[in-house]
Amino acid sequence: MRRLGIVILCSAAMQLLIPSPAHAWWGWLDELSGPGPWMSFDLRYRIYCVQDDKVAASDRKSSNLAPDGMRSLDSFTGLGKGFAALGGVGCVLPTQWDRNPRASVNFSQGFFVAVANNPRPEGEGRLAMVKYEFTGSTFLDSGKIFELNAGGGWLQGLGKSEFTRGYWTVTGDISPYAALVRDSGKHSLLRTITVNIGVIVVPKGFTASDFAAPGPFRSDGEILKTISITLDFSRY
Image (cartoon, rainbow, N blue to C red; front, side, top):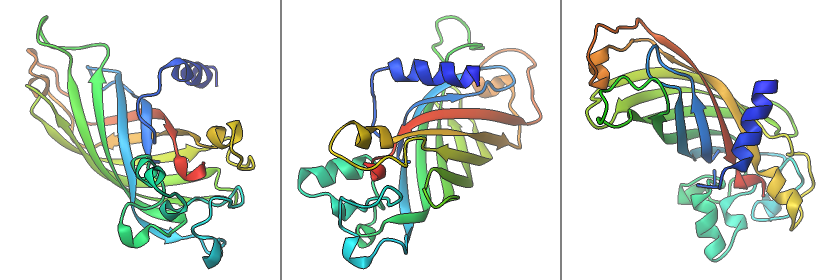
């Protein structure tokens, strides 16, 4: 708990980069058997949504839902709808803009940079990799405080690190302020804060050559811990 508290405190002190289950503006991935840990940010969008039956058809485009209702993209108007779409509100497919998500299929793309244990020779730059991920997610409670995500994707090295590794992942989203009543002030902003915690399982390991580094390094597989702070504007 102390470590989690420190992570959240440090994250809150950073300047906002990207709005997000939706977008993680700060992320941390455990170190591989060598390089890392990794700092990251990613963009995550719901590409197919299951409608929340608790939201009446007449209220699907409303911005004044009960606290347990996730806003649809159609609940925003004008330029606000464009910013909401970038912020990951609702579903990105135009045929689903009126859906208030209860469960969804998601696509995520993230960027990672190694902040320590960089095995490259001096002057070669830091290790970096990108992820592409598909997950299914569903809320576990009526208040939509807890959301479970599971799926898989692949990691791809950037620059001289020319590797591709598939992985499986299970993560949980916790929105501690989700029960707050929506308003036009600080409550609505607090509602968007979400902490994502989980694991990534990479069945096939890595070698030193994957990271353009010398040496006999080789691993059989990886189980990595991950944590990120996101802003989910479907709750705004």
